Image (cartoon, rainbow, N blue to C red; front, side, top):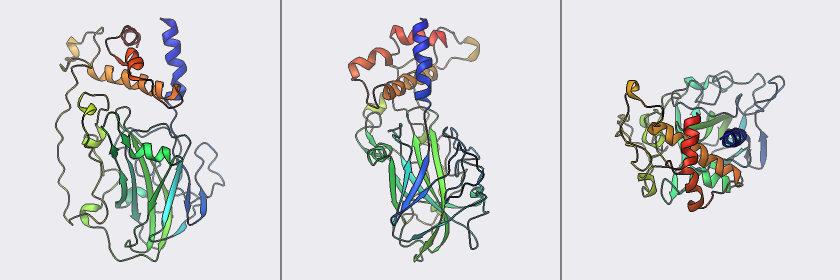
Length: 328
């Protein structure tokens, strides 16, 4: 029993390893990003300051715009980027979360610079996205998996039709290996030159916080449900892509409630007064399965064990999992 607990504790540093965007590249120029664990004194970069590798766990978190309080750095820089050119964001290597979408946004700043403009006051529009590329939700190839295959980087083309001006560019990956979903956004200041004349439409513009809801279907996807084994459609959160909007404001929709898989646990929700401590809730079982699956992912050099072998740990009826559930 103690050895199992020790094993779980030893795995925690790897399970909790996360990160963010560390640098950018455009037209052959590399821009080093903010160093979140260094002193902010003297740091000068195009990236907005951010303070932790830990994920944001709520779609309404006040720091979700740029993984910070929305302000610019004391020695903030701005990169000049031509409309129609590519800009690449590089994450820490190797990025550990292969299941989830990649998204890129722009927000135009008023006036002659973005320095001093709070990111939470801006209107954002999405210029790039990649969700489930192939396969099923539970075991498919995702945008974040492609990012990992591309040397933990993501390249977005700045649309040639975007008006010239000062912008924040926001690269984001959302990890779905556990719920609540994990948000990893970072922002950088750019000045777009040689742009076009197509402004984003009303339904393409969103605020952060506000662009996402914690009940969005794309943020409540359970990778380990029976449905995920066959489902091949994933709804990417956020507004329609720039250039595809209708000009009308979107009407929020309410997703259907998620039903727990009978193979995972009972679909009955126990009232708190009748909850039996020996019988885990649906959310507890799913949480433990996600923990062990993510631990196995890190343990085996970011490669999953064969289904037959990992089922011993991931099957909620197994003695090992039952023992762990009794210990927590």
